[in-house]
Length: 490
Image (cartoon, rainbow, N blue to C red):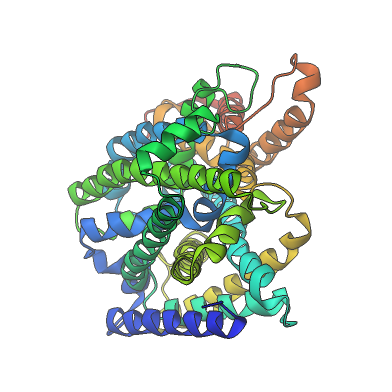
């Protein structure tokens, strides 16, 4: 069966109907607490499994296999660093969030530093997540447009509009309570699509998985350790970067933490995090193995690879068989939705609690619900605008672009939370923190643009996030003075 635009629309429609069914079940008698906190009743193992898909998203689904073409297995250093980051989240950040009974994790910054720090942290999360998640959804829309809808004249912008409207529709009432369960479905589809493609490649070439990896190693595809300290993929930098990427992009991210905080207790949330961290090592290895399989298949068969590495997986999946084509398509849509639906809910939560201050508002629940729905729609519109605006700039692998963006936008959050947690005897001047949080990424951008010329060929990689966080940390220290210990403890 050759997939046509009609088949794609039919598959998306059936998938959407399934999500609506889940939404109707999970949003019965839903209220604001359901939307923001899932009534604190989510089973930890359901959260953990669903968060695999939310953690990976369309960028991992598409870009990590393609990333093997230029960087081999060096990404595994980042993945191993994830384990260290999740330990910090489970043993340091989660106990703090549960002890303070937070709905928005950035409320901590208000209690520790003051209102301007609170708003600054929330702003950087909104900026980070809006850009990062929109890039993930962009990749889904881009593939569907390039492979199917471009030929029949359906514009890229219309596809993006339809996708965002569908997400808005099924998250509008149940919020995080619905997303906890839709994430499980989306994770399953992503993993099935990846496994199916590997299996069909092995069958088509009549080799075993062990033989594939052995042959790929001889071709240099499985190189994991880059020993050049000046390189952007140096193994030591990859591990450190993976650790701090996880702390910042999961532990200091409202979207990811909001799901953890729906668990009934801290112990359940910690079990979720530890099981998730182990699963992500296995799953990321699976995606890298898929990248090896795709490249080896192209090498052996003469398959012409697309110019952009993000297009390697779909090109071969659509070529192999109708089953891999359909599996890939469903997995791709699932990957996009798993990121976007949680992001829209988290952005709404952050704005409602950090800027509209729902936690101290005297408005009735009905008034809060009406206001929350308006905020949800506004963020959906902003999300759509970012997706459309990014199209002319898509030139690199999106996994690299995503981490580059995160290095600049999550760095201030890393610095703010680190100082708040570990420098309790110092109290900064709250009014100056927004300026420091903006100045740090600007300095990092200048250094990154000139690092090879200034530092003997050194290239910044994912460790830019760490450096950005350190600049923010020491900038806050420069405007601080010793004071009595704060009441916030870890």
